[in-house]
Length: 232
Image (cartoon, rainbow, N blue to C red):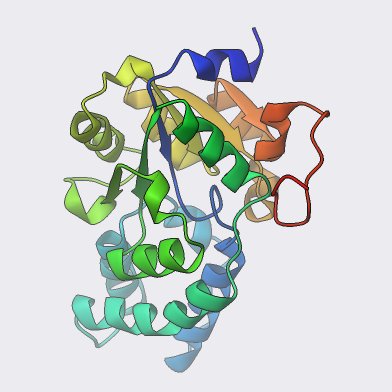
């Protein structure tokens, strides 16, 4: 059975956002470097792996505690919002083939939701900028649940809000913590390639049920697309 055949049997598709639907992970590494630089600190090599899957609030708490930042958690979060909004609005593109796949699913009545570790302001900014809000029946951030990924909380909440059983959901994720969250929720998980997590490809593919290089892989080789992933 092909990946597409497996997906046709599902009633809901649940997506991580950064690195999965949109090409934005480059931005967050740059923001981490710039932000810590404001305090005269270097960005540790292990930082992105350590905070992988944490909610926006959990990440801010981690920064405050690890780096001894003399700023309230809410102020740290607001700093990041201000640093990222313009980039989300103007510099972050959809991943290749994503719009085509979202349209395919929408046309077939498949329910769709976003389960992201990001903050609501940034999520709204990028969804509006890329004009994809209308595809999703539910958008949930990890700040709305008890624990961020790799805990299954966020995926279970999105499935519940959509009125779909976990076993009838497919999850799309780009990093191991997210893949583990989807599997722990009892869902089929598709690993999505991303340049930022390329060094974790072996781990991702081992944890997931299947993997794709891009959403175009789900349509075979017969379709022709332009550089935005749209049918030409």
